[in-house]
Length: 266
Image (cartoon, rainbow, N blue to C red; front, side, top):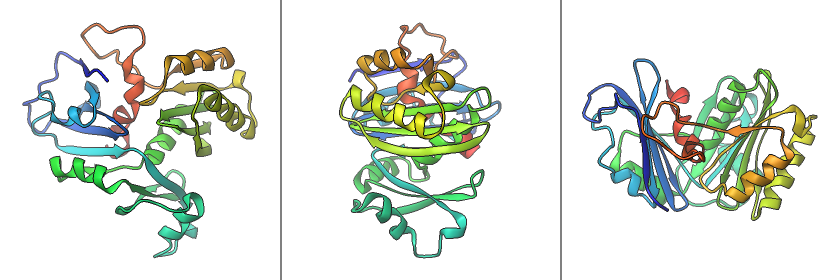
């Protein structure tokens, strides 16, 4: 994968006490986004293969806060009333079966009255924390839920994040979450099938929803296929704040999970 960046002219890496840094890493890629604390504006987006983005010279030198999402993720949402102390592993096992070794974490999702229980690959998480010891882990599922709910007031919102052989999908309507799930997707046809199934199970149709697409491994073939079936389809993120030119296929939608972390921690 080629590295790249989209920067706003007012972004100054050396500026102190001014920025939040959001990191996305795993499955052969990495990216990070910078938001200004004073007004929440996104100012920088940098991506690369492997962990190379985490060593980029454009990184903010003194961020006030840092968060990260690492992939793959094993997670589930549990209603607060059903989450007894010590039951976290049992809830994850019911959904995923066996899991990798790693720290089990939880993140409250107050808008749902639920908690997201999740595990990341321990080695991958350590590669982030070795560089940024004060970084806060975030679950991808919680980021998706918040983002889908925030987009759902005009039409039901379907949010897609495509990673390696997996599609994470969240569907919301008028601020209420209808679905949050992950599907095995080894082909473009798998991706279309599970998206259509998820929309149908939520009582809607492709013509009646806004589909927001993106993800680290979303292909041009998959974009084209989804466009044939969904009338209201758009990138999950864009970079109108970037001052440098960029091509029509905006890479920001590949890295929206880095861009969307700031609202979860601000």
